[in-house]
Image (cartoon, rainbow, N blue to C red; front, side):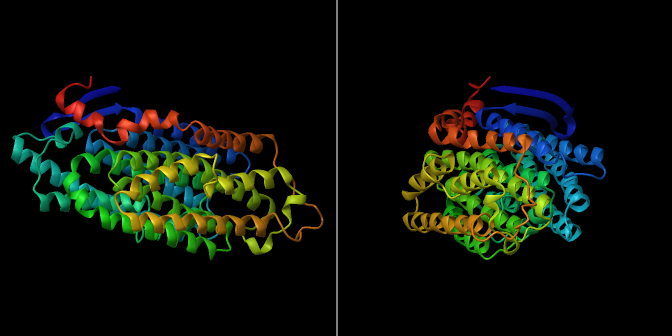
Amino acid sequence: WFLEQIEYMADLGVSIQLGLDGLSMLMLALTSIVGLLSVLVSWHEIQKRVGMYYACLLWVIAGICGVFLSLDLIVFYVFWEVMLIPMVFLIGIWGHEKRVGAAYKFFLFTQAGSLCMLLAILGLAHIHYHVSGHFSFGFLDLVKTQLGFKEGLLLMFGFLIAFAVKLPVVPFHGWLADAHSQAPTGGSLILAGLLLKTGAYGIIRFIIPMFGQQMTSVAPYAMALGVIGVLYGALLAFSQTDVKRMIACTSISHMGFVVIGLFAQNQLAQTGAVLQMICHALSTGALFALAGMLSERLHTRELTRMGGLWSQAPRMGGLAIFFAAASLGLPGMGNFVAEFLVLFGSFSSNTMITILAALGLVLAAVVALKMISQSFQGKSVYDDAGMKDIGLRETTMLLIMAAGIVWLGLFPQTVLNTAGDHAGNVEVEQAITGDCK
């Protein structure tokens, strides 16, 4: 829809290329909403170095916006790194008791993946130079480069490792639970709602159009990893007693559906994956916000030290049930439509994987029931009624996310029409032929 190019280092083939299409617009809108909500949820939680905290928060959001807009791979890589440093600060300075170790682990995992992507970018540009005679890191130039199957496969894995770490895909998920559970609530919202989505966006934007043949060859294995993530993430979540770790592990399961949808290689499943990215950001982001509100009031995240909270906080309990139902894919909510599209689209690609992934929906329901029953149902642990219900600010931000989930469940065509062709990368083909202005 829009394309802006500024020459920067012409001799090296680097230019500042920013482009906006339907997919980018959806991701930018999501970034704006989640970014605003992360500020609102931090309103009373952050008490030290407040100015620096919000500076880091805005720094992360700026990097994410750059990732969703960049069409030059060097600029994309710069913004990819811009996201990393302030998020390490958010976890390491304003996190909980084990924040330093979680920040180190997040940094090491992400940086290792980023270096793999940098090598792949340089290798791709080098091949393009030998084929065309000039240096370029522009996506619209590199996507036309003819690659041999083996060299293309090697380059694709460089990109794929970086994106798999961010999603995360099993077995690259080791950083997720620690980072989410130790981050401040605003940081958890950014992590779950936006940073995980940059990995899926990278697959859609770069891997699908540039490495189509190679992607087809690895699709069955990637879908297998996706279904392992769906089942393993749900089982891992069920075993947790820390409410934030439990919600974090459900993200592994939900992102497994995204991986299945993207590698099913049909537009229906890929569009469902895009819808899943948006709905997961809203539903899981809301659950992290609720977990932060509980931790702020009870000074604990352990489910074993909760119980019977409904009588003291009925508004919080009602909204918690709503978002738990959304997370497990209740019909009428956006998550149901997204997962249905992914499963319906992937059925023709791999029937067995689709059947196994559908079992993940059952496990998700068990996890949601455990979370709600141990926190809001049962015998009250706090008989002195010392816990107050959510106020106007907290209710408003949760209702905004609830409205988005219901809207996407009843009128998903809003997203499907915007992302449909772009999820299938039709615009890339138009841009190459000169039809996209």
